[in-house]
Amino acid sequence: MTGNADLKSAVVIGAGTMGAGIAYVAATAGYTVDLVEPDGTRRAAVGPQLRTVFDKAVARGKATAQDADAAHARIAYRASLTEVAEGADVIVEAVPERPELKRAVLAEAAARKPRLLASNTSSIPIASLAEGLPRPEAFLGLHFFNPVYAMPLLEIVIGRETSEDAREQALALARELGKDPIVVNDFPGFATSRLGVALGLEAIRMLEDGVASAADIDKAMVLGYRHPMGPLELTDIVGLDVRLDIARTLQKAYGDRFAPPELLVSKVAEGKLGKKTGEGFHVWEGR
Ligand code: NAD
Image 1 (cartoon, rainbow, N blue to C red):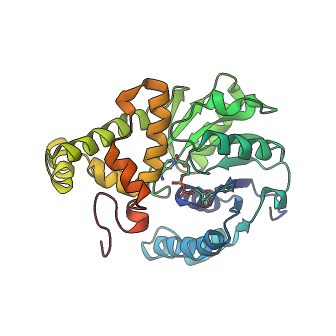
Image 2: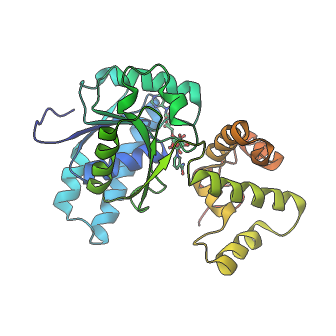
């Protein structure tokens, strides 16, 4: 942290799609942010990437150049949690959707004694991530949406042991970050992923069955049901690997209605992860 006692402090673990976005909104809201990313290539890329997002906010008149520069300067990039001071106001974990990885990262994060500890998990029950944490009452789910700077929803997931105080802190944080929260009880997939992934998986099965092209399956939901984008395009934006991990978690919880379709498994194996790699169910080059 910067050591400025007047500023609130946030630590974000994992500088991928979500962690970078969470760091952006926290810094914009006036927090000092430590963004922890062990992958050197990713760590080097995220600063310039965030600079572009701040520049776009200025170009669209959403921030002054001075405020954007100040917010960008509040973000520090760290290779490890050991470089982060103890006692942050909030630590948000945003590493890949794998329970054992998240548990290890959360244990390390808890040792830095934050006031509030949160996971950005899309699907894993908070109670299962809380196991073994020294202060499970200060732990909950803060499920942001992609892109974090644009999506208004924050899904706050209350675990079995989450305290009323932690719930209130999360609601206050949502207001500070300009998010519109919902408070959800601790079921796998919560309120959002359980419904969104069900639709996405069924769209992939429809593609496998040959019901229609990817473009037309998406168009069906956009023009027929007023969805802002189709379920396959959304899967491309989220990341096919991210959706596969979520589907596996939900399959364990709810059975084979959430079994990942073969087409999803094979595309992930081929490295066709969606927008971030240039191809998923659609081709993104030049789009
Ligand atoms: P991502 O793969 O883009 O980013 C994960 C980052 O974590 C990577 O940069 C990786 O290097 C880093 N990482 C791996 N191990 C680490 C460790 N031990 N310590 C610190 N960093 C580590 O993934 P993402 O899409 O940002 O997803 C992160 C979490 O957010 C997942 O739980 C996912 O389910 C959830 N989520 C994703 C979306 C989405 O649309 N992508 C939306 C909401 C929630």
